[in-house]
Amino acid sequence: MVDDTDMVVEGRRRLLREWINSRYAGVQAAFIQETGINQGELSGLLKTKSFGERRARKLEEQAGMPRFYLDRARDDATTPDTEVGALQRQIESLTVVLASLVAITAKHRPLEAEEIARLIRENQSLDLAHHDLAADILDLIGPAKAGSAKPAVRARKRSAS
Image 1 (cartoon, one colour):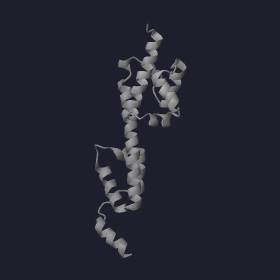
Image 2: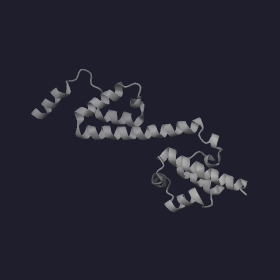
Image 3: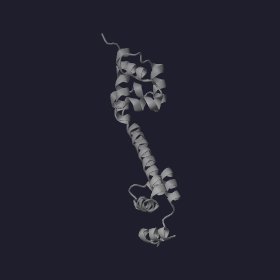
Image 4: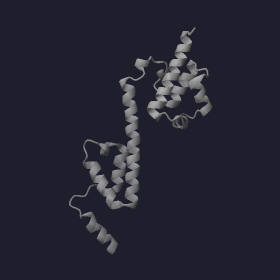
């Protein structure tokens, strides 16, 4: 006979699997790296290990889950706030990657970086120029220069000096 405790624990296991699948593309190693728990413990929690209230709260904290996330009913687990938060974290991650790529490009290929920076500044739908990290990188590349020489002309001038 299945009692309420078994149902709660199975719900926690299911929600933990869903969290790993949705936020880490099902890659347990990424979840482990972020939370600091070990593979054996995670495997146990997903299969047979005791998964009580204290462990659930600690894991929620380690993983950045909303409090009591692992005890929510299935329909409540993906609230709009939770989904918005997940999307915001993904946007932050992608912005960091983009900013890093632009910074690397600026270091090694300054003319192309200026063009990328111009395109980012002009693209209102992306709105990346208003993100702090992206704005900092764009500022490092330099402000948009009105009426500056074409890149090919500037490249010739630089190579001549």
